Image 1 (cartoon, helix red, strand yellow):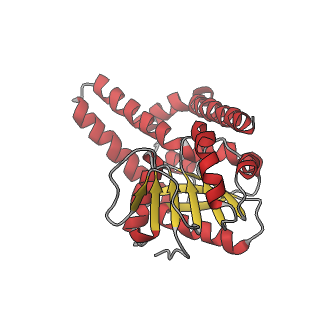
Image 2 (cartoon, rainbow, N blue to C red):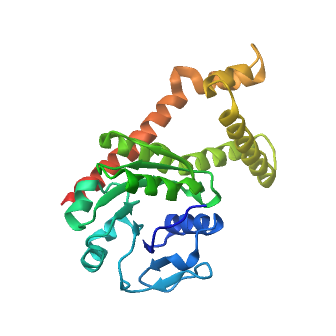
Image 3 (cartoon, helix red, strand yellow):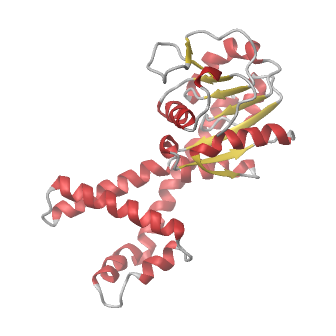
Length: 267
């Protein structure tokens, strides 16, 4: 269980902010220590304070979770309230530390990129900070630990890449599951049954890969007997590295958009 050193302000509580909040509460963080700031009312876990304007006092941690394009809408009100705060964690895709430091005078800024499965404690959170305060960075990592796998990225230039891979990745996996199910229906399976089979297949395979002593590529070859049906299907995916090229193009498109948003945020 993570113990907060003081109040936590969650600025914005959309899909990702709400998912993080849900998991923090489930992990035992005291709801009374958290204040959610949104422009309109919304349902929150019992005990969490809601505000439509910036609260009084000084938070120990600020988690910035608005949409990236809303940054300059909230910054004028937020910046003077948190001047001198110890830790700002931003989950804004495409908004780099320089853009945040230009708007907020705080001791340590940490960029975080969570993905949606953080709501069930099986997400991925990548972190980066130019800050040198080890205690603040440890606090950021500890806060993210209940959400799933936490990975620090040393090179800020790679943050767009990890955002494309793990941040956007669940959307791509969901699309893959849907495609598997749709393919099953073309073979005659009922749509609802094909979807259940596809979801369970991906879930079990991912769990197996996570605990295996071999790479996913090696696992694929292990289940593909020479001349068998799995091998025939893999031959389609492997022909000209078709699947790898498709995924490379997919991640590259997301990475480019992250870089574009960073440039927009810098003005």
